[in-house]
Length: 399
Ligand SMILES: [Zn+2]
Ligand SMILES: [Zn+2]
Image 1 (spheres, rainbow, N blue to C red):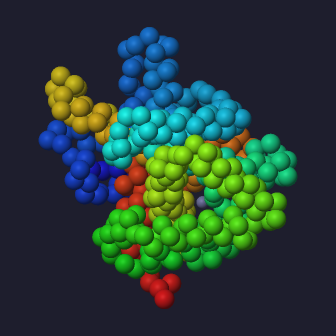
Image 2: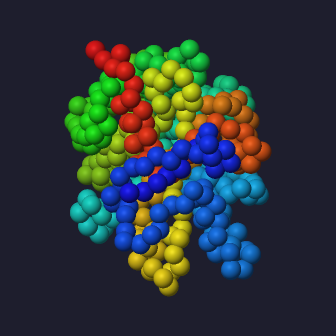
């Protein structure tokens, strides 16, 4: 059994320290490494403390990126949105190239595509829920037309929802105080459409999640929506962009006779894998259908350091490292990349111009004693938290 922190440790113990006890069998070991009441990020700030200050800074900068949370009082490492855009596109290129090379030159074993797929999906998720999202809020260049054009270029490249449709769904509905987290919110409506109705047992939601991930009808449903928003409901300019991109892709594939590589290195990661990543993000994003209290949460990746020293309990440290590398890191790359961990801060300040440094702004508020933030560590805990909430919500929206 593992304990994880639901509310921020800066809040008073009586009202806000609420520990949720979950059975997370896969995370248990024989050693007493159970996370303390401290924020896991504060525990992680001890890592590398005895090293050279520069090495320590690098380790902590990496951990801030990996977890999605700076430690208390951490100095801001300024992130540029243009660098973020360029690096996301470069990441997509590297991932696709590595996947194609692996498939074409080395092996046809699809399982070995895991690493390139993580990079490709992560880049695509960087580009949509962080950069295109920023553009939809008109916070990338600050010019609405330019931002929408950038968003249209991104969504054309990835065959995703056009900027006008995204604007209506996200700004006019998801951020509308009267619609947010109600069945009229497109994100909540999607969950209802997929069968995540309130009032089921928590186990039923987990089962539904696993079934949906591999359900052909789910992937077909997602693809159909993408097709409609690219070729039917978008503006004429956006439809022409989508058609032109399709012609370019088909021409390249025919000219290079690379149909199987195209399917393996582009279609599979950007459809099947992308849909699974988006599903996990939607299912852990908000407390949908809640009628009071905070409907948002901060989702962070990582765990506190083992309490015992390495000498006392090496297996606890090996287990911790294993989970950090093979669970939390892939989740951060492909499911909760970019600014998704601090999505609650975004809902609090949707017009914040310092978007790229939202995690620092959020931390500054907490350091200053602002209450109401909910921190969940580990994607599985965030999903469980939302499923628990859905399970306790009256089944009033069931059809
Ligand atoms: Zn949201
Ligand atoms: Zn938004």
